[in-house]
Image (cartoon, one colour):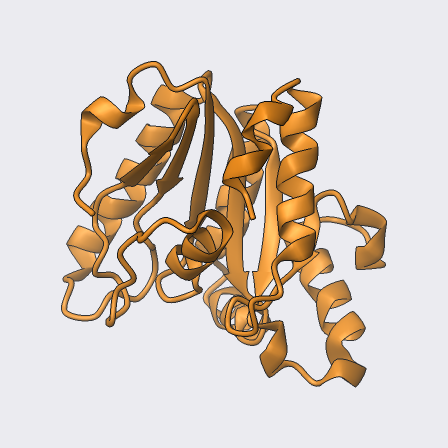
Length: 209
C-alpha cells in the first residue's frame, strides 16, 4: 500500500503506531484492522508514514527507527527527525499513539544505551508523546518469547526503565502485553476501544478487531 496524502483529509480520529524497526508494528496493525498493510521482510524498509483510512479513522504506521538493514546512519537520523516532526505537526489531530516495543529484547537494548550514557529512542519517544499531550499505549510485543514465570518481573523492569512505578499491572490502561505472532491482541483492542469511547467515537469500534 502506497502512502497517499489525501487519506489524511477529513480524518477525525488518528492512531499512530510507532516503534523500533522489526518490533511488529505492521503485523499488529494488519491483525487489528484486517487491512493489508505492507510488512517488511527486512528491518527498516518502511521509511515514510503509511496511512490506512477506515471511515473517519486514520491509522498511521510510522517508519521504524533504530537498526535498518542497508540504510546509512545519517538516513536513520533523518527518519527519526521525520517521526518527531510528524507528531509535532499533527499533535492536534492525533488522538492516540501506540508505542510498540519488543519485550524480549527491550531491557538488553536499554542496557547497551546506558553503557554509552544515552537514553534509548523508545524512552525519549514515550516522554515526548506525553509532553505534547498525545495519549500513549505501550504495547509490549513478543511476549511469547518470554518465559511465563519471568513475565511479571520483565514487565516490572520495563516499567522502571520507562519511568513508571511498578508493578506493571497498575497501568493496564497504558501498558499492554501482546503477542502478534500468537494473535493475542484482545487487551490492546480493548484499550484502543476504551480511548475511542472516551472520545465519544464508539462508531469506530467496528474498525478494530
